[in-house]
Length: 201
Image (tube, rainbow, N blue to C red; front, side, top):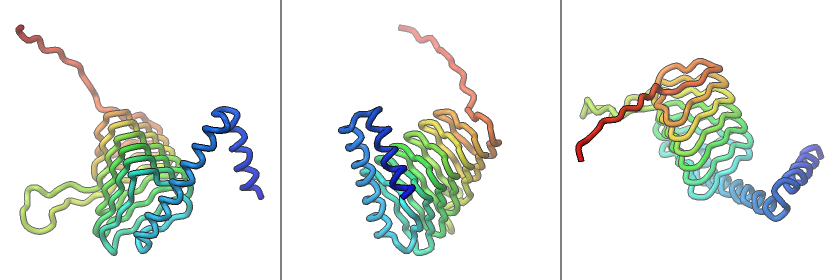
Protein backbone atom coordinates (compact mmCIF):
# COMPACT_ATOMS: atom_id res chain seq x y z
CA UNK A 1 0.00 0.00 0.00
CA UNK A 2 2.87 2.37 0.78
CA UNK A 3 4.42 1.67 -2.64
CA UNK A 4 1.11 2.33 -4.40
CA UNK A 5 0.70 5.62 -2.53
CA UNK A 6 4.24 6.62 -3.51
CA UNK A 7 3.55 5.83 -7.18
CA UNK A 8 0.33 7.88 -7.15
CA UNK A 9 2.07 10.84 -5.46
CA UNK A 10 4.94 10.67 -7.97
CA UNK A 11 2.52 10.59 -10.90
CA UNK A 12 0.63 13.58 -9.52
CA UNK A 13 3.81 15.60 -8.95
CA UNK A 14 5.20 14.79 -12.41
CA UNK A 15 1.87 15.61 -14.07
CA UNK A 16 1.87 19.08 -12.49
CA UNK A 17 5.37 19.79 -13.77
CA UNK A 18 5.38 18.04 -17.17
CA UNK A 19 1.73 17.75 -18.06
CA UNK A 20 -0.38 14.58 -17.98
CA UNK A 21 0.34 13.53 -21.58
CA UNK A 22 4.13 13.78 -21.25
CA UNK A 23 4.08 12.09 -17.86
CA UNK A 24 2.18 9.20 -19.43
CA UNK A 25 4.77 8.94 -22.23
CA UNK A 26 7.64 9.00 -19.74
CA UNK A 27 6.16 6.25 -17.58
CA UNK A 28 5.32 4.19 -20.66
CA UNK A 29 8.97 4.48 -21.71
CA UNK A 30 10.04 3.31 -18.24
CA UNK A 31 7.64 0.35 -18.41
CA UNK A 32 9.02 -0.71 -21.80
CA UNK A 33 12.57 -0.35 -20.43
CA UNK A 34 11.73 -2.62 -17.50
CA UNK A 35 10.26 -5.19 -19.87
CA UNK A 36 13.36 -5.01 -22.08
CA UNK A 37 15.58 -5.49 -19.01
CA UNK A 38 13.69 -8.64 -18.03
CA UNK A 39 13.95 -10.03 -21.56
CA UNK A 40 17.71 -9.37 -21.52
CA UNK A 41 17.91 -11.06 -18.11
CA UNK A 42 15.98 -14.05 -19.46
CA UNK A 43 18.56 -14.54 -22.22
CA UNK A 44 21.43 -14.50 -19.69
CA UNK A 45 19.52 -15.94 -16.72
CA UNK A 46 22.48 -18.00 -15.39
CA UNK A 47 24.66 -14.86 -15.23
CA UNK A 48 22.44 -11.94 -14.15
CA UNK A 49 21.09 -11.43 -10.65
CA UNK A 50 18.79 -8.43 -10.23
CA UNK A 51 15.47 -7.09 -9.06
CA UNK A 52 13.75 -4.29 -10.99
CA UNK A 53 15.85 -2.23 -13.43
CA UNK A 54 15.34 -0.47 -16.76
CA UNK A 55 17.19 -0.96 -20.05
CA UNK A 56 16.26 1.48 -22.82
CA UNK A 57 16.36 0.84 -26.57
CA UNK A 58 19.54 -0.34 -28.28
CA UNK A 59 21.20 -1.02 -24.93
CA UNK A 60 22.24 -4.48 -23.88
CA UNK A 61 24.01 -6.46 -21.20
CA UNK A 62 25.87 -9.53 -22.44
CA UNK A 63 27.77 -12.30 -20.68
CA UNK A 64 30.12 -14.35 -22.86
CA UNK A 65 31.16 -16.95 -20.31
CA UNK A 66 29.43 -19.37 -17.96
CA UNK A 67 31.68 -17.93 -15.23
CA UNK A 68 30.61 -14.28 -15.77
CA UNK A 69 28.60 -12.77 -12.89
CA UNK A 70 26.45 -9.64 -13.06
CA UNK A 71 24.62 -8.18 -10.06
CA UNK A 72 22.28 -5.23 -10.64
CA UNK A 73 20.69 -3.37 -7.72
CA UNK A 74 17.20 -1.95 -7.39
CA UNK A 75 15.97 0.83 -9.68
CA UNK A 76 19.08 0.97 -11.89
CA UNK A 77 18.33 2.98 -15.03
CA UNK A 78 20.35 2.41 -18.23
CA UNK A 79 19.60 4.73 -21.13
CA UNK A 80 19.92 4.22 -24.90
CA UNK A 81 22.83 2.77 -26.92
CA UNK A 82 24.78 1.54 -23.89
CA UNK A 83 26.85 -1.63 -24.09
CA UNK A 84 27.76 -3.67 -21.00
CA UNK A 85 29.90 -6.75 -21.61
CA UNK A 86 31.17 -9.22 -19.01
CA UNK A 87 33.53 -11.94 -20.21
CA UNK A 88 35.61 -14.83 -18.83
CA UNK A 89 35.55 -14.78 -14.99
CA UNK A 90 34.39 -11.17 -14.89
CA UNK A 91 32.30 -9.87 -11.99
CA UNK A 92 30.24 -6.70 -12.43
CA UNK A 93 28.30 -5.17 -9.55
CA UNK A 94 26.00 -2.17 -10.01
CA UNK A 95 24.48 -0.72 -6.83
CA UNK A 96 20.96 0.54 -6.17
CA UNK A 97 19.68 3.60 -8.05
CA UNK A 98 22.66 3.91 -10.39
CA UNK A 99 21.95 5.99 -13.51
CA UNK A 100 23.89 5.24 -16.72
CA UNK A 101 23.29 7.69 -19.55
CA UNK A 102 23.37 7.22 -23.34
CA UNK A 103 26.18 5.53 -25.29
CA UNK A 104 28.29 4.28 -22.39
CA UNK A 105 30.57 1.24 -22.63
CA UNK A 106 31.48 -1.01 -19.71
CA UNK A 107 33.84 -3.91 -20.42
CA UNK A 108 34.55 -6.30 -17.56
CA UNK A 109 36.97 -9.25 -17.65
CA UNK A 110 37.84 -9.31 -13.93
CA UNK A 111 36.04 -6.95 -11.51
CA UNK A 112 34.06 -3.70 -11.79
CA UNK A 113 31.95 -2.31 -8.96
CA UNK A 114 29.75 0.80 -9.22
CA UNK A 115 28.38 2.08 -5.91
CA UNK A 116 24.80 3.06 -5.19
CA UNK A 117 23.39 6.43 -6.33
CA UNK A 118 26.25 6.94 -8.80
CA UNK A 119 25.43 8.97 -11.92
CA UNK A 120 27.27 8.35 -15.20
CA UNK A 121 26.97 10.89 -18.03
CA UNK A 122 26.90 10.04 -21.78
CA UNK A 123 29.83 8.49 -23.66
CA UNK A 124 31.70 7.15 -20.62
CA UNK A 125 34.00 4.15 -21.08
CA UNK A 126 34.96 1.87 -18.16
CA UNK A 127 37.47 -0.96 -18.66
CA UNK A 128 39.11 -3.22 -16.07
CA UNK A 129 41.69 -4.64 -18.50
CA UNK A 130 44.21 -3.73 -21.17
CA UNK A 131 45.38 -5.69 -24.17
CA UNK A 132 48.71 -7.40 -23.55
CA UNK A 133 50.27 -6.07 -26.76
CA UNK A 134 53.87 -6.93 -25.71
CA UNK A 135 53.30 -10.68 -25.71
CA UNK A 136 51.93 -12.62 -28.65
CA UNK A 137 51.64 -15.90 -26.72
CA UNK A 138 49.53 -16.67 -23.65
CA UNK A 139 46.81 -14.45 -22.21
CA UNK A 140 46.11 -11.45 -24.40
CA UNK A 141 44.68 -9.40 -21.49
CA UNK A 142 46.17 -7.64 -18.47
CA UNK A 143 43.42 -7.63 -15.85
CA UNK A 144 42.80 -5.26 -12.99
CA UNK A 145 39.76 -3.81 -11.31
CA UNK A 146 37.67 -0.66 -11.20
CA UNK A 147 35.98 0.25 -7.92
CA UNK A 148 33.65 3.27 -7.97
CA UNK A 149 32.18 4.38 -4.64
CA UNK A 150 28.71 5.57 -3.69
CA UNK A 151 27.15 8.80 -4.96
CA UNK A 152 29.90 9.47 -7.53
CA UNK A 153 29.28 11.82 -10.47
CA UNK A 154 31.11 10.90 -13.69
CA UNK A 155 30.99 13.55 -16.44
CA UNK A 156 30.64 13.09 -20.20
CA UNK A 157 33.36 11.43 -22.28
CA UNK A 158 35.32 10.13 -19.28
CA UNK A 159 37.58 7.10 -19.76
CA UNK A 160 38.22 4.99 -16.64
CA UNK A 161 41.11 2.53 -16.92
CA UNK A 162 42.02 -0.60 -14.98
CA UNK A 163 43.24 -0.39 -11.40
CA UNK A 164 41.20 2.71 -10.62
CA UNK A 165 39.58 3.36 -7.25
CA UNK A 166 37.17 6.28 -6.92
CA UNK A 167 36.01 7.23 -3.42
CA UNK A 168 32.48 8.11 -2.32
CA UNK A 169 31.01 11.47 -3.43
CA UNK A 170 33.84 12.15 -5.90
CA UNK A 171 33.22 14.14 -9.08
CA UNK A 172 35.06 13.20 -12.28
CA UNK A 173 35.24 16.17 -14.66
CA UNK A 174 34.08 15.74 -18.25
CA UNK A 175 36.70 14.48 -20.69
CA UNK A 176 39.02 13.09 -18.00
CA UNK A 177 41.13 9.95 -18.33
CA UNK A 178 41.26 8.30 -14.90
CA UNK A 179 43.74 5.74 -13.59
CA UNK A 180 44.78 5.22 -9.98
CA UNK A 181 43.25 6.43 -6.73
CA UNK A 182 40.72 9.28 -6.51
CA UNK A 183 40.02 10.21 -2.86
CA UNK A 184 36.48 10.55 -1.58
CA UNK A 185 34.85 14.02 -1.61
CA UNK A 186 37.17 15.42 -4.27
CA UNK A 187 36.88 16.72 -7.84
CA UNK A 188 39.19 14.99 -10.32
CA UNK A 189 40.19 16.64 -13.58
CA UNK A 190 43.10 16.28 -15.96
CA UNK A 191 45.20 19.40 -16.24
CA UNK A 192 44.56 21.13 -19.55
CA UNK A 193 46.60 23.88 -21.15
CA UNK A 194 45.60 25.80 -24.24
CA UNK A 195 48.22 26.55 -26.85
CA UNK A 196 48.01 28.52 -30.07
CA UNK A 197 50.46 27.90 -32.89
CA UNK A 198 50.49 30.50 -35.67
CA UNK A 199 50.78 29.28 -39.24
CA UNK A 200 51.56 31.08 -42.46
CA UNK A 201 48.81 31.82 -44.97
